[in-house]
Every structure is written in C-alpha cells, then in structure tokens.
Amino acid sequence: MNEKQIQSMLKDLTEQKAPKAEINLWPAIESRLQTSDLTELKGTKMNTRQKLIPRLVAGIALAVILIGVLFFTTPQGQAMAQSMLQFFTRTESNELPLQSFQLTPPLPAAGTRTPNPASIIDAKLEITEVELQAGYDVFEPSWIPSNLTFAGASIEDPKIVRIFFRYMDTNGLVFRQEPVP
Image (cartoon, rainbow, N blue to C red; front, side):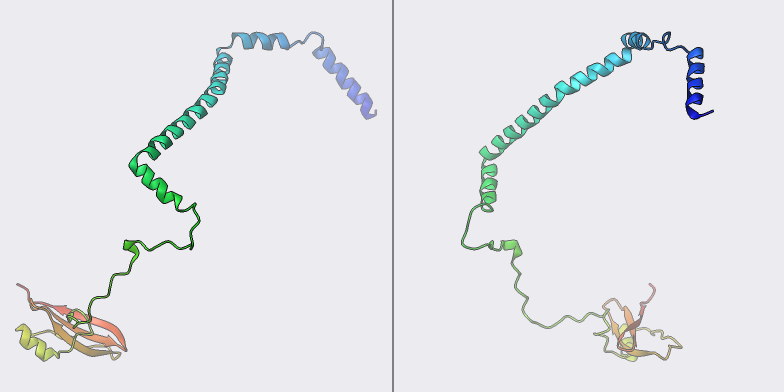
C-alpha cells in the first residue's frame, strides 16, 4: 500500500467516527460569548483604555505647560531661566568664570609645627627621660626582634607614654602606657 491509500483510508475512518456535516462549532462559540460576563468586562476595559490614553496625554501636557508658565513667571523661575539662557547665547569665549566656592583658599602662613606626641617623627626622648617626666617606671619589652630598632619615646600631658620601635625606615611598633588610677 502506498501512502496515498493509507491517508484516504484514515480520512474515511475519521469521517465515519465524526462526520464533518454534523459538527458545527460556530453556534456553540457564539452562544458562549453572548452569555459570558468576562468578555463584557474585557471589552469595556479595552474601550476605556482607548478613551483614557488621549485624555491622559492631554492632561499631562496641560500640567507641564501650566507648571512651565508658573515657573517662568515667578522671580526665581526668571532668574533660573536667565542662568540657563547663558548656555544658549554666543559669547567671546567658551569659558565660564569661577564661582566663589571653586576658588582655592590661601595657604596658611608658614609657622612652627606643633609636635604630636603620638607621631614617631616627634619621638626624640630616651626611656629614662620619659620616666623622669612621667613620674613612674615605664615598662619595656624584655625581647625585641632584631629587625626592630628603638626610635624614641614621647609623653603627653596626662602621663601617657609612647615608646616607638622602627622597622627599617618605616613605622614599626608602638607601646602606649599610662598609670592605672
């Protein structure tokens, strides 16, 4: 049997089971659409959306125009319009003048620097000198790695002592001590 014969046999069998002349789906679909509440709601939504979009666009455009008119009739709006107008007019140069907040403040007068006892740069004292000034025995580490060297000590007013150890040419280790009240 060839393929055409098989297809014709299948068509005949389907026609016997469900004849085309008896099946008419359109009246059933039509009656279902007429009785359905869902389609009416969808239809009204579509109609209102089509009517709403032009109204919405017109309302937004009217609001923007009114805000623009009110904005440019107030003194602040006019000042802003004038400042914006400078970007659209031709001038002799294309540079704007510096504002006062953009100017660099003058440098302070060169004077003596206030020493900071928490800085390794200002640590010039020996431990015995710091102990005399602080009035108590300052504890020192019993062992320090060989790559650390003593850089100096400093003291702050309320008897806070700092001992600095330097690692090569950078900061290294700082011990901070103060008496317990």
